[in-house]
Image (cartoon, rainbow, N blue to C red; front, top):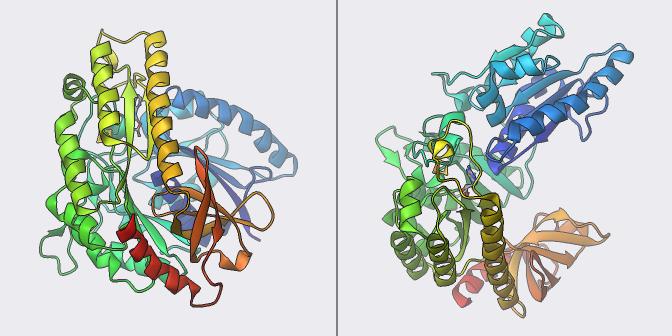
Length: 468
Ligand code: 5AD
Ligand code: SF4
């Protein structure tokens, strides 16, 4: 009898990848993923610590799950509850004290040990939670089994974890630990397996993905991300490569050259800048200035003129003046972003910026965020409008809400809605873009729908990149 496993994932794509791998690790124990917590034999909350009140939200979710546990107990069963991810790492022991119904607290670096931890939790019985938030010597990736289920047309592949940058606002270096790159041979092998199962697009993941420096297959030296994308592009059937998230400091010549030479590398780059003020960038310990960011983007656009830029911004960092915020708006106007995420600064316990006395009042943060989001929203809509009337290659990777509708991604990460038969799922088709909305596009499939259609669209993908 299969056991029901429900995983709720918060936060970034890295966590989505980790959740899939946790399901892989637990499959040999008879756990099969399910879409709802009701009646589950095991529930995992894979948590994120980046936002304010992250831990509080997890505690209230745990409160709600008590009912599920009680329901299961009535039928004579037991629901194991595990908390994984960055809140688990940060809270540790405290989580077991505050939420005694939790059976297991496991950090992002130790989930390969889940089978053993689950066996221990089953033996220990309710109220005797088990904690594993080590940063172990052994390599987690060496101990994970191969992926047990196809990931679909667009898949994630984690190549790097952790961060040594210590931006003064960020918890990641504390929750995810030191920077680590997977050996290139492992990454290539996982990519080949994904492609063999039907994946056409791979997004390489890492907290600092372009700090990648994986050991080369013959063990002599390292490959950077630029070289890795060249090697991945050789895999037959892999049409698209993306990577996220990167740091301006780690954009090197090789990566810029890859944007020029590697056709499969999509012309969309998420490169967080956080602020346009040098004073604030310095206080954030970002180790780049606004102008070095501008120069990096210039060089990337020289290499790949179609490159659409995306970024992250924080407003109201301690000490940020109106003039500093004005510099951020100026940078946004200079670069022109196709997409962006922006946040009010929120003090994270344990980070250097959280104890600085010059915290910006909430009202000011709110006002600045609204101003920034207005500008970024206008830029995104203008970017989307510029694609209307064009023919773009779209990888159809999911069903839409309406019957007969499929949704896919343009090369620039825009969601594109089309009416198309389900058999086109997983294919790259040419789409004539007819309408632009703030967060999506609508279009008509233009590719002749025959078996070779995908390939002709792939050729067009290259033509299109040259044309924009
Ligand atoms: N406050 C606000 N935003 C933050 N981010 C990270 N830490 C904080 C914080 N303390 C944002 C950054 C980062 C993104 C993932 O989350 O912009 O790039
Ligand atoms: Fe956090 Fe900065 Fe590292 Fe990004 S580079 S994960 S923002 S410390």
